[in-house]
Amino acid sequence: APVYELTNVSKTYARNAVIALENVDLTLRHGSFTSVIGSSGCGKSTLLKIMAGLIPPTKGRVILQDKPVTGPRRDIGMMFQQATLFPWKTAVENIVLPIEIRDGKAAAKQAREKAHDLLDIVGLKGFENVYPNELSGGMAQRASICRMLITEPAVLLLDEPFSALDELSRDMMNMELQRICREQDATAFLVTHSIQEAVILSDEIVVMKPRPGRIAEIVHVDLPRP
Ligand code: ADP
Ligand code: ADP
Image (cartoon, rainbow, N blue to C red; front, side, top):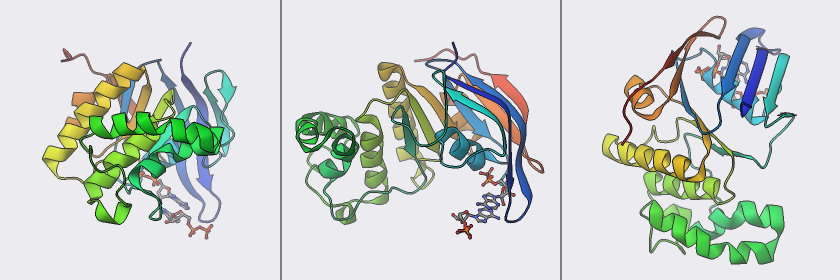
């Protein structure tokens, strides 16, 4: 069974009557990596927000793991362009926060070791007890990855997570992300501006077109993987 199944999804923003998405059908296979590309305003972020349950579609169905998406869920991990760490919590405290919210303080304390391991993986060993204002933008994004991964979500929704990084760091983070997805058997959906990035990372590339936002084409990528 597919992990995600979107049927006939449309979105009109009532406030300005913009049709951001029209009749989008999309299926994501378990363990697949899908990128979505397309010009600004073609509905990429809207699509991702609907998949995340952050905004409702005007029309259509969104099914994730056999259940309709009606709001934010525990099986969804998300990352955005800007890191959203709480400034009054250290890196580790930020990373275990999803566990604390879900399972309480004792569980969060137990998860600290795992948070340390994740920080190590993204090259932030030694920054466990540092506050976000002492981290660079790229480091804060790496910590955000750890926070997303600590609950081992089945699905990762990524809205240009590394676009603020320089090219070298972005390539490194992308490779790391790809590796982690495979290791955790996660299904990934990435909004990107870079065709190159999409080709390198993805099994499928969804090409969108604007006014109204719709899927123009889905390209299957068949490259040998490292
Ligand atoms: P409201 O007035 O309904 O609270 P806002 O103006 O606060 O809505 O917008 C909510 C979010 O949507 C903000 O993040 C804003 O940047 C974004 N937004 C609003 N209008 C547009 C638009 N036309 N295009 C893209 N983003 C928009
Ligand atoms: P993309 O991510 O591809 O740039 P978006 O999903 O942000 O596209 O936007 C699709 C269309 O919907 C655009 O015309 C945008 O202005 C509009 N839009 C996005 N968010 C809002 C919002 N909160 N309120 C009104 N219009 C919006």
